[in-house]
Image (tube, rainbow over all chains, first blue to last red; front, side, top):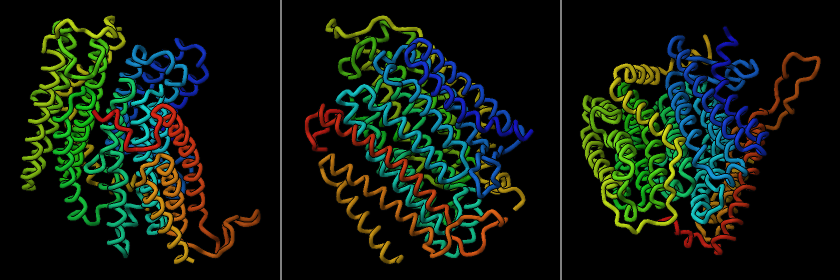
Length: 500
Length: 115
C-alpha cells in the first residue's frame, strides 16, 4: 500500500527522466528517438491519470523521499490541484510530442530536442508534486534550463534575441525566489510547505511575513507573467519552432500561477486583506494590458502570446477572490486555458506551414484550402473568448459567480470587457488568416503537404475542449473539490506532517 | 558580523542591479552573477550566523550534542551555487552566440523580434 502510493507520486518525475535518458542514448537513431519520445509522453499521461484517480478516491497523497520524516526530508505531495495540473501536463506532453514528430526538423532532433523536451516535462511535473520550497526552486531550475536550451536551439537570430530576454528575466526571478526563501528559512527554520504553513501562522513578526510574501509574489509573478512583469513573454514565445512555443505557452507560465496559488493559499494567508486584494488589482491590470497588447499586434503568435498574459489575469483573479468557488474557477480556468492555448499555437503552426508566414497581413484563404482546419481553429478561439457552451464560458462564469457575492464589481466588469476584446482579437485572426481571400502572390516557401501528425493533436485537443464544454458538470465538480481543498490547508498540513 | 555581511549583501545587490540596467550584454551577465551571489549570502546570513561545532555526529553518539551549527543553509547554498554555475555557463554561451549573429553588444539593438 505504501509503496503503491509512492509509485504514483514518483511516476510523473521518473517517466520523463527515463524517456529523456532513453532518447539521449538513441540519438544516432532519430526515428526510434521520435517514437520513444511519443511513447514516453503517452506513459506519462497514463500515470498522471492514475495519480488523479488515486488522489480523487483516497485523498491527498504523500511520499517522504528516502523515508526521512517530514519536515526533515523532501516531501512529495499531491492534492487534487496538483493531480489535475499533472494530468493536464500529461495531455499537453502527449499532444506536443506527437506534433513534434512532424514539426521539429532533423537538425534540432540531432542536437537533443527530444531529451530536452522530456527534461522540461520532468521539471514541470516536479514543480507540481513537490511539498518543499527549496525543492520547488530546484524543479523550477530544471524546467528553466530545459526551456532555455529549447528556446535557443536552432540558433536563429530571433531565437537568440528572445532567449537573452527570457533568460535574464527568469534568472532574476530565480534569484529573488532564492532570497525570499533564505528569509523564510531565517524566520521559520523550515522549508517544508506544510510545516511553514503551521509555523508562520504563529510568528511574532507578521509584517516581515507579509514583506516576504511580496518577494514571492514578484518572483513567481515574473514566471507567471503578471502585470507589470510580463515583458519577457511576448518578446520570446513567438521565436522558437511552433511545438516549442506551444508547450511553453501551455505549461510554463502556469507553473508560476500554480506556485502563486500554492503559497498564497497554504503559507501566506496571514494578511489576506492586503495580499489578496493586491493580487486582485494586479489581476485586473494584467487582463487589460495583455488584451490591449494583443489588439495592437499583427503577428499570429504574438497575438496569442499577449493573450496568455491577459488570461493569467483571470487565473490570479480566482486567487485574489480567495473563496472556494473562486479558486475552483481558477483551477478550471488553468486546465481549460492550457488545452485551448496550446491548441491555438499548434494551429498557428499549421497555418504558417500552408502560407509560409505568421504575419496576418500576408496570411489568408485558409478557409478555402483547409475548411476543416478553419473549423478546428474556431473551437479553441471561441472557447478562449468565452462563448457558450465552450469550456472558456464556464471558466469565466465561475469567476464571475465567485466575484458577485463579494461585490467585486470592478474586477467583474474588467473580466467581461476583456473577454469581449479577446473575441475581437480572435475574430481578427479569423478574418485575416482564414476568411480573407488571398491573391496569387503566394510565398514560394509554403509547404503544401501537411503531415497527419500535425492534425492529430489539434483534433484531440479540440475534442477535449468540446468535452469539457458539454460535460462541464463533472469537470467543474472536480475543480470545486480542488478549490475547497485549497481553502482548507489543514488537510494538506495533516497529510504531510501526520498527527503533529 | 551580521552588520558587515548585510552591508556586503546590500553592496552586491546594488552592483547587480546597476549592472543589469546597463545596455551591454556582458555587463548584464555580470549583473546576473552578482545577483546570485547576493542571494546566496543572504541565505547564509538570514539563516543565522552561529559560532558552533560542525554538525557531525560521532559514531558513539545517537544524536548530535548541543551547540552544532545548522548545516541546512550551507546545503541550500551549495545547491544554488551549482545551479547558478550551470546557468551562467549557458548564459555566457548564449551571449557569445547572440553576439556572433547579431554583431552588437547592445541590448537596445535586440529589437528584430519586436514587430
